[in-house]
Picture 1: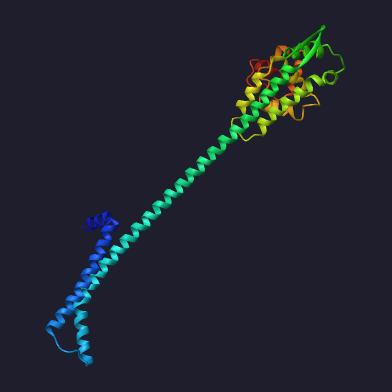
Picture 2 (picture 1 turned 90 degrees about the horizontal axis):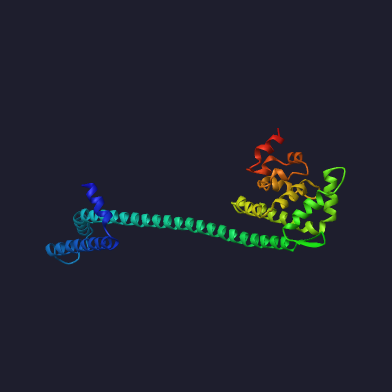
Length: 286
C-alpha cells in the first residue's frame, strides 16, 4: 500500500499537486464555515459578554475543527514536501546535465584547440618543406666546365670534393671541405636543422610521422653529408642529438661509408633506426 501511494505521489504532475492543495484549502474553509453555521444555528442568540461563553465557543470550534484541520494540514505538508523534493531532484538533474554539457564543451574546445594547433603546425611545416625543396633546387656546383644543379650537387660535393680532400684527420678534412663549400651547403644544413628542431619543439603528438616525412626526402648523398656534418663542430651539439632521436639515418647505406665506417660508433645506435644494415652496424658497437 505504501509503495502504491509513493508511486502515485511520484507520478503526480505539478498542476495536479497544486490542485490537491487548493482542494485541501477549500475543504478546510468549508469545515470552518460549516462549524460556524452549525454553532450559530443551534446556539443562536446575541453575542455574549461573558468569558465562559467565549470559552465554550472556542472549545466547540477547537474540538470540532482541530482534528480535521490537523489532518488536512498534514496532507498539505506531505504534498509540499513531495513537491519540494521533486523540484530539488529536477534541479539536481539540471545541474548534472549542465555539468555534463560543460565537460563536453571543454572536451570539444580542447579537441578544437588540438586541431587548430595541428593545422598551424602543418601550415608552418609544409612551408619549411617547400623552402627546403627550393633550397635543393637552387643549389649549383661547377664541375668539369659545366654547372650541376639540384640534388646531383650532393653527389659531386661528396664524391668529387670531400673524398678528394686531404688532411691528417677526417675532422680536419671535413673542416676544410666545409669552409670551401660553405656558401653551397651551409644554408642547406641550417635549414634541415630548423625543420627537425621545429618538429621537436612543437606540441603535436605524432612528431615521428613528420620526421619520417623529412627523412624520406633526403637522398643518399644528402644523408652521407649530414652524417659527416653531424659529427663536426658545426652540428654535434644541436643536430646530432636530433639525428639520434628521430632515426634520420635509417636509410643510410653502410656501403657509402667511404669516410670511415668506424665513425658510425660516434652516433647512438638509435640514429640508424630499423636500417636494413642494422646487423652490420650493430657489430661496430660490440
